[in-house]
Length: 306
Image: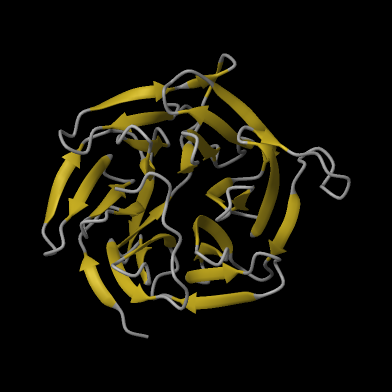
């Protein structure tokens, strides 16, 4: 497979967002920053958000919304960065709103129903201006938090917890018709589908898993975890895969699974872009790199892309 290096020297990159002018925005989880990578490959600092930014998406107002996990604890081994256990007491995370023209940002949400967000991880914004985002929770040496799926308004007017508990929810995406939300759980290597009755309402169906209202789309075997995801134009769910480093593409019915290998066991995310949306910008986090590879199917254009 043809692979072209876009950027290197990043501090555990995540959350790529391809712009229509050919630029790429990227989070540095270990650096607490967001950078812009130009079409010419030049990289510039866009914002120092602090914490551990890991997900980006544009809203209908032109602002970029950021999932910030609050803290990123890493260790280095053989020249590579890898996540480490969170400390017993760690800062909580937030949803931030970023002006990509000026680099100025504000914190939009830190709590839901009086309880702090723990570690927001990935997000997707629907056509109505609603943010679906996962809270991964934090993993400490002796225990971990339950995670959850949330829905919040980009205008700051409301946030609610939609599904809990989830075990390490990470990637989140919407089907092309906007009728389904997909969530990837990291340590279980399971991808879930939630059917929507309304933009902010998960449907109840008799064959859904009791309690979660979710449908198991796919469960992967072996030693692999799931990270962030994007959906392509044909509705395939493309999930960055840890340890078995690469991108795992799952058909909308969950019956077909394809794996595209990458040279990093910490392949954490991807974004579709390019003139024909057939380029996948893949994040090789422990190597600190972003690469571009041709993709078999056209990527889905995100709502409010700019």
